[in-house]
Image (cartoon, rainbow, N blue to C red):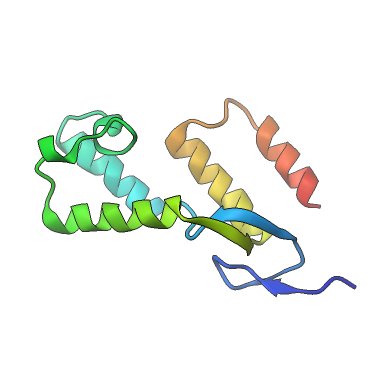
Amino acid sequence: MKKLNNCAWCQQETDLPMVYAADSPLLRWIEEKIDAYCYLNKIDRSELWGDNSDWGKLQLPEGFEAELLTYDALLSTVTRKHICKHCLIEDHLLWSKFYGGMDDNTDLEFIIDELK
C-alpha cells in the first residue's frame, strides 16, 4: 500500500511521488485579471506579463503591481513537493489556456495516462 501525502497546493491526499513544482499553481482569477487589464488598456498580454514586459512604462496601480509581484514570486519559486492528480491536470489546462501550451488534447491524454 502506498503512503499517502498531502498535495502542497490543495492539501488533498495523494499517492503520487514528489515533483518539482511552483509554490502555487496558476490561478485563474489573476490570469483573467491580467487579461482584463490588457484589454482595458489596449495592450498585448506580453507587454504586461512576461520576459519582455516593462512595468515602468505602464503606470500600474500600486495594488495590482503588488499582486503581480507576489504571483510572479509564487510561480517562479520551484521546489520538490507532492502535487495531486487533480491539481496537475487543472494547472496544465490553465497553462494551455493562458499560455498556448496545447494545440490538441494529446499532451493532456499523455499526462492522464501517466498519472493512472
